[in-house]
Image 1 (cartoon, rainbow, N blue to C red):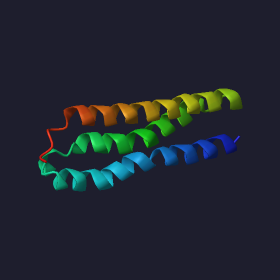
Image 2: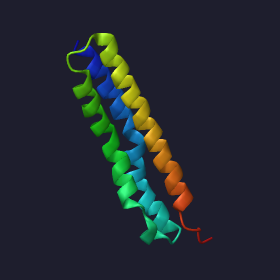
Image 3: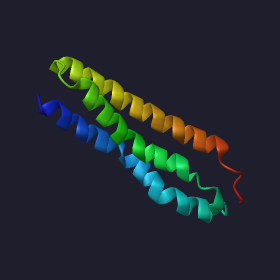
Image 4: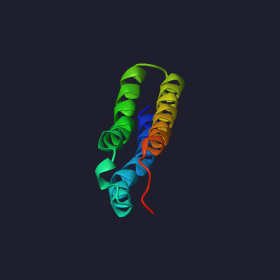
Length: 101
């Protein structure tokens, strides 16, 4: 029964790679384009915080359920995490100020 949360913990950790990479690299990219003041810090922080929060919520919702239901709840939570991350990326691209060339 412990195998399911461990496997999904690894998958959620892989889902953190993109947000953490953006948090580390995006400010430098914005600075290089001359729009360093426009870094969307709240959205970057939200993108990093969502996967762990959704994992914990899925674990709490799956407590005491059969293995298949638990895995299904964690799968939906993982899909939600990725969908929200890509939504945040699209939103940041939409609100980005014009680049100075």
